[in-house]
Image (cartoon, rainbow, N blue to C red):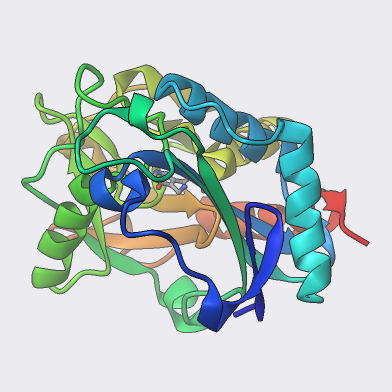
Amino acid sequence: MGEWININGEFVRKEEAKISVFDHGLLYGDGVFEGLRSYKGRIFKLEEHLKRLYRSAHFILLTPPITRREMGEEIKRTLVKNQLHDAYIRVVITRGEGDLGLDPWKCPRPTYFIITDRIQLYPETLYEKGLEVVTVSIRRNPLYSLDPQVKSLNYLNNILAKIEGRNAGCMEAIMLNQEGWVLECTGDNIFIVEEGVLVTPPTYIGVLEGITRNTVMELARAKGMEVKEEIFSRYRLYNAQECFLTGTAAEIVPVVKVDGRPIGEGVPGPVTCEMRKIFREYVEREGTPIY
Ligand code: PMP
């Protein structure tokens, strides 16, 4: 992990990086966050991540203590301070300190902090062999409770799904909505491949608009592939030729088995492998320079 943590613009050594027990981010999960990555000294999709962070904050009526542009500069400053080129970056904005009640109006000063870490990829064998996942009984938060577009500090919904997945011996879990439509995983979006066409659930059904998801759609279309945002059930998922997950930390992960059913040939398929290659090439080119 980077030695220096940025708390409200001040660099603090990680051992001394502390947040008040009265911070509502801790007491109530009242806050928002983003996970970004830098590749070879460039921050991948910085503007998109900042936009999503500030939209999440706006949704929960939280005014960040600094502007979007300033936050971008703080992220760069933190990477420079830690001399990192390839990193995972966590940005958190909390409601700040208040009393023991819920009332956000009693929290006068929001807190932000930035942690930069060396990236820990899944083991390479997982990308070669593919992942086995299960669907779980815990449903994703419905839009009318907490819109999954908001990357809030309240991830208990996803954590419960993860626990259910782990109890079934899987590292990831697929979450459905109340009607049983496939939404996304606990920390990744999902794609299936049907007759060479990429299909992913539309965001209006209640999935996070993943930045990796959007990038994959863009790159696939640029390669002349057909991409559809369409709702689908477990029936289509089990019978797809391929399936993969997308996310900032994991990038593109092939899925070879769902609920015990092999997907396609039960090995990472050609479209998934091609997308992985295109994506890797793209991340090396794209990005906001840090240095
Ligand atoms: N869904 C959820 C619930 C997530 O937490 C994440 C990770 N931020 C994703 C999807 C993937 O989004 P992204 O590609 O922007 O990392």
